Image (cartoon, rainbow, N blue to C red; front, side, top):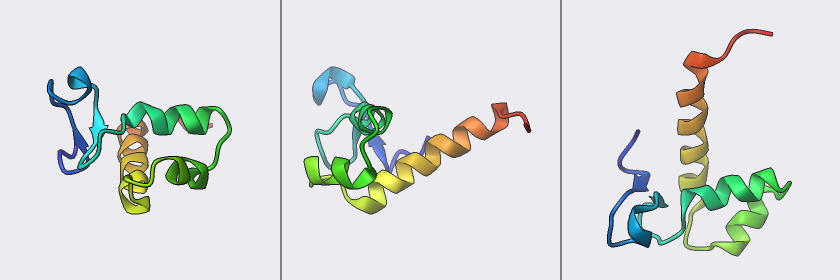
Length: 72
C-alpha cells in the first residue's frame, strides 16, 4: 500500500484509513461508488479530497486486486 495516499493513525478516526491530508475515510469513496454515485458526486461531497488522490486510491485498489483476478 502506498503510504503517500492513505493514513492510518489512531488519533484520526480511531485508526480508520483516511485519505492523506484529510479526515475522510477511504471507505466513504467506495460507499459512494457502491451506491451508484459518480466520482464527481463524491468529490463534491468531500472537497478536501483531490481528484488525483481519489483516482490514485482507486488505481491502488485495482492493482491490489489484479493478482487474484481470473480471465473471463
